[in-house]
Length: 207
Image (cartoon, rainbow, N blue to C red; front, side, top):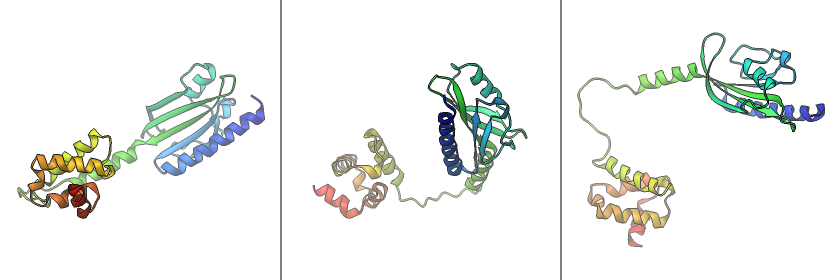
C-alpha cells in the first residue's frame, strides 16, 4: 500500500474513532493503532480511560495481527481490564490493505465499573419498603389487556403503536370476543397502549 493511500485510510479511521468516542462518552475509550509501526502504534485515544499515551507500542493482540494476516479481523466483547484493575469489555477491529495485510486497528474499551455503579444505584432506587400494603395505581385488568395487545403486536412483528388500522380492527375484534371490551375502562387503556385516541378506536370498531 502506498504511504499516501495508507494515510488516507488511517485519517478516515481516526474520524470514525472520534465520532464513536463522542457518541459513547464517557463510557467508551476508542483507540486507533498503526500496525505498520508496532513500536509507536497508538495514533489517537478518544475518552482516555486506560491512561495510555499516543506513541505507545502495540498490544499483544496487535502484534498477533501483524504476525498473522489470517488472525480474526473482528474480536468483539472480550473481557479485559484497565491498568488499575477496572473491568472492561473490549472490541478490536483489524483493518487490512488491498494485499490482505493488517495495517491498522480500531479498538473500543468500555468501562464496566461505571455501568456496575449505575446498576447498583438503579437497584437501590427501585427497592420498595417491607410494609405489607396491597395497593395498585393501575385500573383493574389493565395489565391483562396490555399483555394481550403486546402478544398480538409481537405476532405481527410490530410495536403496539405501529399497528395499522386493519390490524387494530382485528385486535379489537379479538378483544371483544375474549370479553375484554366489557371490562371497566377498557377503551381508555387500549387507546393509551396503542397511542391513539378513543375516537380512533370507536371508528375502528364501526368500520
